Length: 418
Image (cartoon, rainbow, N blue to C red; front, side):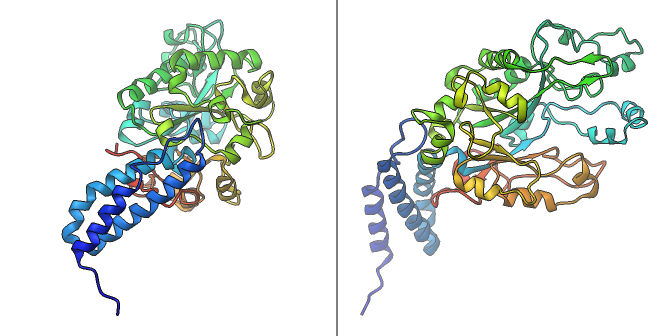
């Protein structure tokens, strides 16, 4: 006959398991995880599960086990959970301040879609600190001589003087705005300024989860401004500005992820992405533009060798590591996530979901397993509805619903909350 163990015997057994198990999985060399580290992670999963089971069976002893469980879960998160095992919230056009209402009304006389610009984000550091945002998006315009965007049409209308200029846009360097001439209001007006805000927050919070910064290189013509077309030289300048703000030790670059693999795609599909221990306190950049812009960025940099940003690519390409599906409906997001690519999608677009208080796209995006779910509404806009987007559980991140290891615990990913 089987006898029931007394609680004391049970906890003695658990204590011996804890002592025998490694305190954490050995950190991998570079990105990815070696065989020994995987075995350690599997053992830690068993110990963590046993401790949680014991805590659930005996409430009186649960408090005593909580610290041990928390410590194990954190060690597991650092050394067994990788960047692509997360899901975080991002913002679309993260710098954006909507034009004044009379400008929206004026623009709508010519294009009714101008109402799509009726959204405003908090400053970047507020998004990171108060809203738990871990992916931002910046639209950049090349301005190597300076002053190209310093006298936009919208500013002239507001000032009542078309010759009026914006001093902050006079200096050479990349500018951050949505649409040249028309939708030009930003919480930070240059790329250097925007990245400086992120770096200052990162330096103050060195254990944060990696922050992804999506860059869209823009070059359209609007009214009086002919923006500069991005080519290899402009992309060199863009990389240089990023490196002016972030030293290599705060970046996750294609070179870091690729290591000694033949291509970047080979690396992410076989060895994988950096663990959280390697990725905390760092940022990674991705180029939003496909097509010609992507090819120009790759020119002279096969598989993104020496480049700062990952590219929005497709499976089968040597540079494929980051994939963008703006619309989550019908997209093979779960398949790409399971294969090892990192994926960004959008939970809303053009203010439509907020105006209609429609949550279908939000739920599809969150359930898809996309690593970065981008929204214009980390908080509701009371002019429209209660619509907003948060990571389920109310944390800065959760274990990816499609592709996370068994020992991943949401509460251990970024302890202390936001």
